Every structure is written in C-alpha cells, then in structure tokens.
Length: 114
Ligand code: AMP
Image (tube, rainbow, N blue to C red; front, side, top):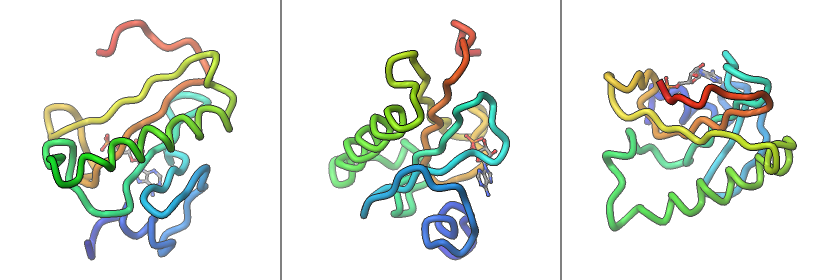
C-alpha cells in the first residue's frame, strides 16, 4: 500500500534493523523500544490488523509465529521468555495500520497486560 510505513520498510524504501526475513515476513527492531528486545514481526502483504485474518490468509499466522520463534532464538530470549502482542484497532492502541506483532523481552515484564 502506497502510504504505509511498514510496506515501505518491507520493500527497503525506509531503513530498519532487520532481525529476520523470509518471502512472507520481515522482522525488525522497533524504533521506540519498550524493552531491550523489541522486534516487530510484519507480514509483507498489507493486512490492516488481525480483524482481516480469515480462511484465505490465516496461513500467515504460521509464518509470523515461525518468524517469532527464530527471532526469539536469535536474540537470546527463547528460554528467558518474551511476550508476543498484537494491537487491533484504536482502543487497543494500534498506531500503524499494517498487521504486526510486538516481540518484547530481555527483562522481567509486568505480569499484567495493562
Ligand atoms: P502499534 O502501536 O501496535 O501500532 O505499534 C506500532 C509500532 O511501530 C510502535 O511501537 C512504533 O514505535 C513502531 N514504529 C513506528 N515507525 C517505525 C519505524 N520506522 N521503524 C520501526 N518501528 C517503528
């Protein structure tokens, strides 16, 4: 999508620190990290958020989880633990309307989600 910042990152039109990439997914460091490890896992195809996941594109969730596992291993949080979060819509705090999961770890996180 033309004006989407994550589409531009996926196409390398905007720089990012890439931690993992395959033909379906790109994972790069969040520009405002909330923890020592904060990576965004993003499908290359433009989907607004999980509300747009359906029977035709749900395979992407496998690709995203596969990427998340690889990122967690690479960045050393697979054993210590991490949180995988996706915000859907304005009330959830979604600010970039291209589906993404935050992989956050590298320190003890609050046990509460909110
Ligand atoms: P959300 O609020 O769930 O939509 O998350 C959007 C995330 O994208 C925020 O954590 C931002 O810090 C992050 N972000 C926005 N622009 C960039 C960028 N150019 N490179 C990396 N992360 C970004």
